[in-house]
View (cartoon, rainbow, N blue to C red):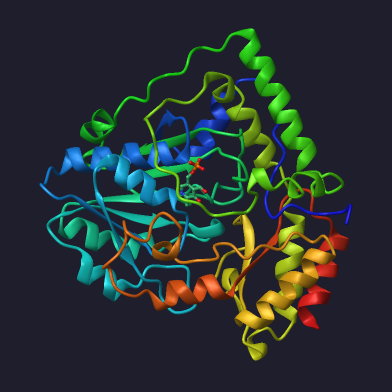
Length: 388
Ligand SMILES: Cc1ncc(COP(=O)(O)O)c(C=O)c1O
């Protein structure tokens, strides 16, 4: 009971050594960052820019029917109708045929989500966006470059999150990266709404952040994670819909620590993830009806995942989840419902039809942790449970 891995969670580094070259390198030459208070805010800002770029009476944005409800909060805040697209069978990607059917003159943006670190097929989505003059937004809140691979992003704009449990976490913050090579770039960057900048941060604010970050680092330690899990008011792992109240800029205390946290993230050797991928590859998962999503999506060993996702028949998924949880191995069944079923979204998303693949993802998803607290012994135990 006292050893519990968290499903996600890299520690926060509290060094303020500002190294702009680290960010330039991580974002890639072509992209210029604009910072916001969260990933949701950054996505809302990108959708606002998409509407300004293509003003229509009834703007619509296309997005996958399985995933984080914050995408809906961002679309609603920006004043666009979220139009759901089901997934392809056994792939975390939007169904291209359905995407084609749902793209129309009102479409201002297509949101491609890099789920759990697995990239969407941006090159395949681009012609649909270009055909109707819509923006291709790459939501990379869950995928950040490991530093070992080149050019992971291909969107017209890329959205990042530095929130809790994200690849690079600062307990809040987000960014829109604008592609400088995009033909409409200058116009686009100018169309992004300003986030109301939070003040430069007095000493109290800095101390408060350090205390919060220290507590977070303590809580995601496997020896202490049982503690926040035992506190129901923290709603850990629950998926909820929260409307976005306002469009704010990123806290400068957090911004001052971004480059050192990116550097720490990129210096991780990814040994847990690589070991997990190798052992799972040696098991006959396919024969047992288990889909190893990173393998099925041909994810290379230099791609860092936020979590390791598997699709498993619901009853077995739930049994494995219970066993792994009992052993403190940090499994998660997120997201437990497709977007139209999430509490608070039933009315907002009603009448859009059925999304059987998204629903089946919700029933079959099991993720294993790959963060820096996961040891080789943990991986061996996880694989033993899965193989039995
Ligand atoms: C794919 C995706 N986009 C956007 C967000 C929103 O990010 P934030 O929590 O920083 O608002 C999340 C949050 O989990 C996410 O998973």
